[in-house]
Structure formats: C-alpha cells, structure tokens
Picture 1 (cartoon, rainbow, N blue to C red):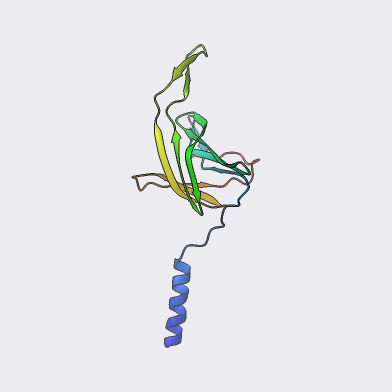
Picture 2 (cartoon, rainbow, N blue to C red):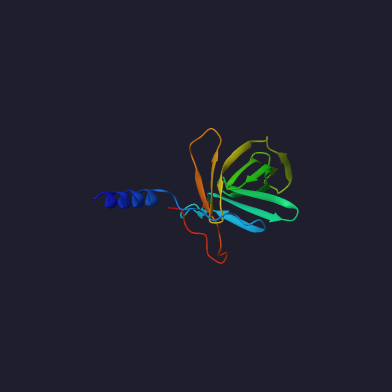
Length: 150
C-alpha cells in the first residue's frame, strides 16, 4: 500500500511539472511569430521577431501590428542569459509619410521594455509591470501561409 502511494505520488509530480524546453542554439537565425490576418479587415494582428546569433553577437528585430504590420525595428539593450531574454524597443518614433509619399518626420519615441523566456521552440514575452504574457512560437516552415485571426 505504501509503495503504491509512493509510485502514484511520484507520477503525479512528474506530470504536474512543465516539460523542459530545448535551449536556444548559440548560432543561427530564429524567427518567432504569432501573426495572423483579420478576416474582414485584412489587418495584421500580433508580433514577430527575428533573432540573429552569429560571431558578431546577437541582434533582434521586432515587428508589431497597429492595423498594418509595423517595423522591423532593431531593439536596444538586448540581454540573453540562458533561457531569459530582455530588451527595449521603440515602437513610436517611426518615419511618417504624408499622403503624397513624402517624408513628414518622426513620431515621438515610445520605448517598451519586454522580457520573458526564450527557447528553441517558442518565446514568451510580457511588458514589465504587467502580468500579460504573449507566446510567439518559432517558425520552422516559412512556406506556410499566415493564418486568419480567431
């Protein structure tokens, strides 16, 4: 009876623990995205990031949706440590263009600090000071079409 309880308790704990994620390789190009397209509006929703890891270090480019897909913007203050990632991204001071297609200036900076976990399979990010987290799975098949939002 005692052995049965021990085995059942061990199994319950094993299934309750999250699976170990694969660490991110040191070199490569990694694209993570949860982008989708609005069925009626045709607008993008979600985010996409591209991490380049090579002999020159790590570089990260961020794209986000605000109706149309915005970016890519190179992030600043990128920190990768094991499975943790943190960075700052300016999603405000993009070049603006007038109706005739001429450069009209830059918008005011809007710096967003994001942090979370990164692994070979996915990245989970959130803004500091909030409990909202967003999961971006890693893209491995670039021929696949981006789906519709649900």
